[in-house]
Length: 475
Image (cartoon, rainbow, N blue to C red; front, side, top):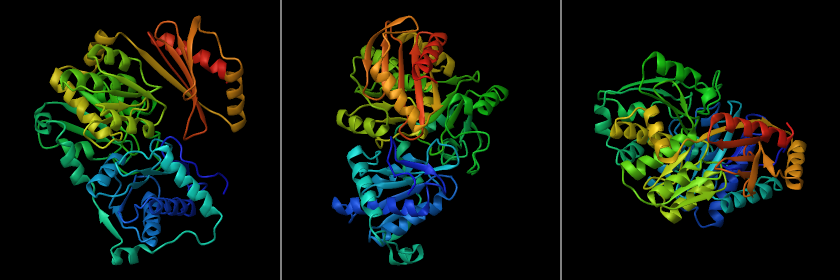
């Protein structure tokens, strides 16, 4: 095998037909079957879901055949489904976990294999490490992968087809007053980015005064002209349409609908940090909830400000929802979020969910009577202005080692004229500067990238810090 199979911040990802092959997917599925047997979970069923990428349903079927070959029952999704919907199906079917065939926001040439644990959350490191060990062991064996043809597995009752959406719709309707939302005269544009979230906002909200227009809703595995990540550069069409059609808001979901992007009524992209802080403000002030807030270390300091303002604890984790979810459950947190635009909520499956996040954002608009841009001004009146930016650079393995050596051996004392007050190496190199600004340099857990992040009191300052960060890594 050219590259060993490693589970990063959220599963294993590879380029289709290069690393992501049927043989490797079957190997992963067999490793999951071994994990279930090793932990006495093989008497329970497993859910298998998939996104809209090339051959996703075929990779899912191949996984189902392997589980069935190990005499483990499988609920195989009938059609592409958002990852949070598959995760919720783990709970409704009382399954041991789920396999989701998805590469989330990666380009169309990629696919991925995510594993969800018994609570529907992203599997913690101890679980994925055990699966990785099983994969390594299986590669040394001949005939270690068991299979039962899908038609035979269906006849034997080891595989059945599942539509996970009805139970999910019923569940999320308990979090927001759907009827109140439907009565609003709002014009909403939705960009499904050709992904698995297609049709979900319409299915929940149609039938009232709301006008919902969906773009990029058809299945197109090449994701033409976009990467299915809901960030500003990929949402130009949505931004333009919001202005042209005088929409009140634009909502976008990524390839597997666990991340959300928001465009305000002026066509401006709200950063993931602004949306995270607004959702925290909504739950704390509008909904009157109390409890911990969980953020990853790449997330905005506005969350910490809100924690102080409402006297609730704020906890920080490394990047990856597999770190956020366990802490959310342990602390009974009201929300957990990360810089990528993924947010999870108390009372729901401990998983990022763009559909529920979008409904909460709409409810925030309705309850306050404010437009998205007015909401941002209101947030800044509470916590002060915060501006964030990020740049990603492709690097080789050799460049990664060079950057690591440089930052370890000679970390800077000042950056862009500000003194470095603290250095945090929990996940990368985060430099806290005088005032509340910071610069972070870290390596992606799923792609050959170095990411440079910054937050400051102005956008100009945030971008200057990024320029300095680029010089630090030598790119």
